[in-house]
Length: 482
Image (cartoon, rainbow, N blue to C red; front, side, top):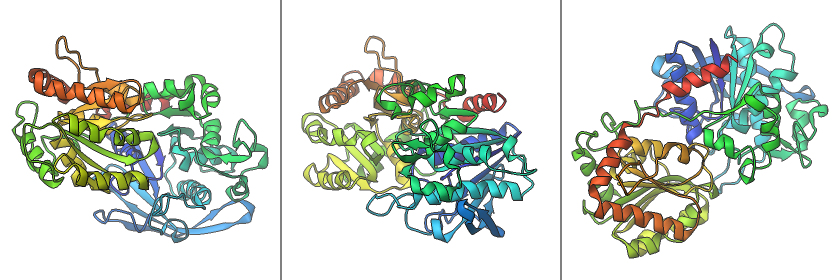
């Protein structure tokens, strides 16, 4: 089967979150199963990884948009890992800027609907202009949801694009790509599609909504999240349109790439370790404490955070209680992330107030994220909602027990601790509040000191969990063949 992924990010080229990991890992897993897979992403010239050899493919390519507009771009290519070929659409007009989606003040680029409509159309033009004839075209999130609409509404001649199956994966329904209706002419969609069941959303264009309408199959990234998005506030208004897909809306749990995230082989940590020998984890903890300015004491549990500082992640609620936690308990926090300015400022400031107890790194470092996972005893994710979440799965592999809100993929992947027998792989709470976080952290810390054999048992159980892509990729195979 020939499969084309069209997405706004792909690891290891460019990454702002879990979308990139999924596109990079799932495409490789499908290739391992014997499929021919290509990935198409934008060429973000200022943000793309410099560690990958990228070569010219097309010097020029014409992309026809609406209103008779012609956009010109070039195409580059690379083959990291040699299993999946990656194509990169180069347009300085749209992708030569400091951020992927927003400026340094975290404000959306005003031309985002034009940027990603162009990219979606260009990706399909590339498929038309090459000999790659996909059986399935798999789009991801609002940025490429228009791909499904273009496939079904434009004339693609003899390329077969209109006959390929259109699959759309929703990685986070909270981001829908809602913009002014004036972009519709540039996109090249007939105004007859500007209706409440397709693109129209209170007088504006909703790209994700339109993609859902035209997709042959819609997926999201965990079974629990699929259930949550079919009704209630977590659907962000799209529940009726998802329900209309019936059996063609499905939650498939994300996998992780254990060739990257495995403490036995991880090259980003000071010492490797496994469920049989935790000696290396102690060395990672010492280095983590040193790097984050924490009191270096192997007997003090460390709680790690690697996250976007966004409303979804619930870190504003953690901020309200983290000082009280370290004042009341023997525990430390190592916090890494970036995003909302208010949270960046808070987590930049509080290490000075709670010296030796809280450390922070404002920004993102791949090497540092591995160190936080490896060196922490616990990992906290107090998310308001979490479509899947990957960090809690990484944590499990590193014997770092998750403390999570019972929602979405966090619910699907973390087994609640049982004090009676020491079973489980983490600590879950239902209601998001400062007190709920305080009490659950207290539960984890008391277990660390009072029931160390339970901690050891849970760590071993966590490290045996298998959330590799081999099972999830087979689930995608099934929907590709529907």
